[in-house]
Length: 139
Image (cartoon, rainbow, N blue to C red; front, side, top):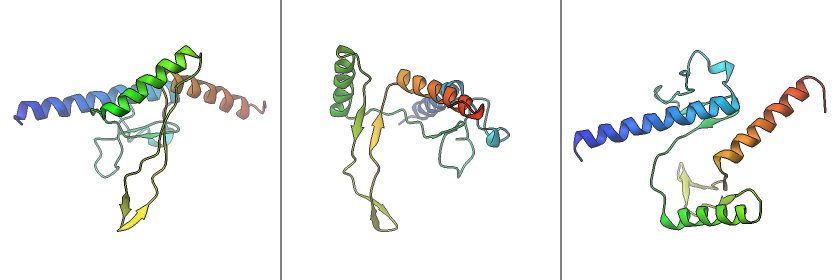
């Protein structure tokens, strides 16, 4: 692969981290404990050894800009179309069957619940309202 292609891929990966970080900070807010470490976009991926890309008030995030298997993309598109048809929110649940070894010992991989960006923003907004109400002593 030519060096220009490698640099282009690296640049795109950093752009995705920044975009995702901005989105997460906008909807979730910054973590005050990390304010002197994270960038203005919430990125910490530039710090080696942390093993994640973005931090916000409630999340550590790993950002991937990759092609996903056609079967998985088809399932995501299908559930989104069906959700719209029925006036519901889409949820794609994946139970990874890949073996994961930790120090040679098989480890259970958590199920992945995938929702849309809009639904995630809505849930974060509701969480912020609930947090504000609970800090004011309102149920």
